[in-house]
Image (tube, rainbow, N blue to C red; front, side, top):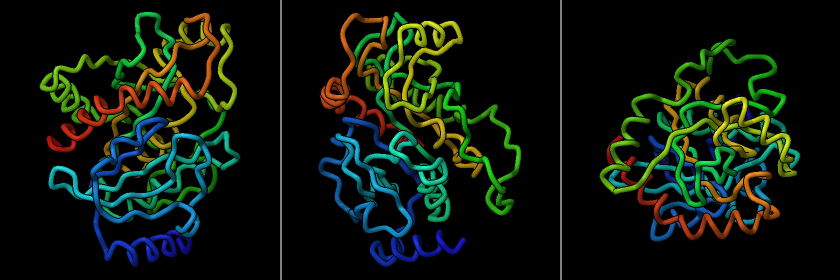
Length: 269
């Protein structure tokens, strides 16, 4: 808890004790969400015990601000397991959010389409996940003051938030699809054989993040929802070679639509 206290003390010294109730994690190419938002910006590199985000398309800052009259903290880029961070380092911000007062978490990510009925730019409301990362962020000694040893996962993606998201998408005339997210470690993209196997397992989209964050949020009893933006077709779905640049470009093109949806969801929480 000493590390957590040091992190909290530093953040509170910058934000004057600003108490967020909603946290948003922005995936690749979705940085435009923060355009025109004003508040307290804190680079990750300045925050004690925070890792660094070195992935292109991630700004690497926390933004504490008001959205729709709600106190929010925006994570502009995340810490990935494939960058060499431990699972505990990658999910450390979620523990900090809980201590700051966050009770609702909106996770976003850029994902590859496994389901052949999906199109580039589709927004997928995640209803469940498959953890194919070979590890779990809760491995190790459990802190009973934060969460139970064996947390139930049946409502990891909060059913009430899912209904709010559906209604908000309808109000904005956004075709919001539902699906299952499968998480791999990366950083290599998947093979065609792996994607075929994932499809058989029931995955609709695939990515390299989000699931560890959702697991820890569920453990901390933070209500959580995830939105995936389809930014590329997975290997075997398309004959084109995959590239991170394509992910970023699609994120930028569709970013406003995702931003509008998130802000409408925040308004209705």
